[in-house]
Image (cartoon, rainbow, N blue to C red):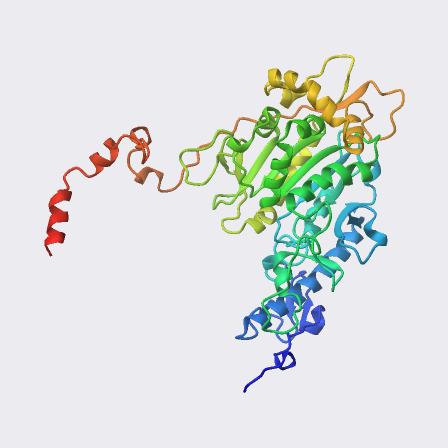
Length: 479
């Protein structure tokens, strides 16, 4: 009788997580090229066996990740482990993020939430390992541009940066680190023919950061108060990519959350996000999206071309019901490449918004712009309940309350506690002339006559006019 032992299974292939050992180097243009042929980029298909290809890709991603994180640290960012204080417990689940060393004294912080499929600091491996290079395909180029900006009109220092980690949420005890979904499948297994590594929520997740939604909440309610300090009045800019942008909107779409953060946010750049405006329930957030948010969407049009206003564009099949102006990212195909293509436009815009931050005296009533344009009646009705809820979260509550009385440099509150920061920026009314190239060829718009499949059948009957359906059925039946 045939019996196959576990030791007889083919071993899982192993590749070194080092560029040179894999046969590659970084050329003067910051692109990864083959040592054997300098004209060649990274080669994924090295075998007919997909497991070998995936394992080599995993090793290449690890090697690129080491380079990217080293460069981020050279730019003044340092790694923090979540949950906070987990640096000393290496054997317990912990999730890395990056934040500027100078974040505690910053007057403006740029928060970046990437996609749930990418490693920390990575935008698109297709650019890192291909035309464009390491800096362009990662957060390195984004951080470099942000650090060349001014924090605010009264602060010539660069803003601080915080890179969230929406992708690497799966903890693997054997490696003592978190992995992205694709890395989880490609990491080493007991043999090359095993189905994969078993994932259980209790063992393989990070407390407080088990999902993208939990991670976004932890960043706002635990990380920011801890790193900035309770006396900080720093303004916040948010850049979200893909489903990372959607997760931020979902978090903000809560009356209690919005009551704390509305006075802190400068703007939001939703790059490749698709969170529908009819899903938004908070009136203040709806007004904020219209006035101080922009979406940079997949489009074949040149960068910054207006695709839609806040109310959508019926002349395109692209989804534009986002509640904010929709501009072209210049990237037609891949969401992961949208911020790479639109980086200049996005960062120029958040700098423009930040320069509209002013210090106002609380002795004169300064309206909270987005809430003022939202449903004031609803806010007054919920005011008492919100106040009691905020007091239950002491760290987040005390931190966000400091946005009401502080100074423009985020320093300790002293004799200037009658001042607070507001942002006066408002999106312009875009002249949207865009329509799909085939829009005029589609014929008349029959939306007004359409009653739905379950409504009156006039439309369906009229569409079948002239067709002898009964005779046709009888003819086929007789055959």
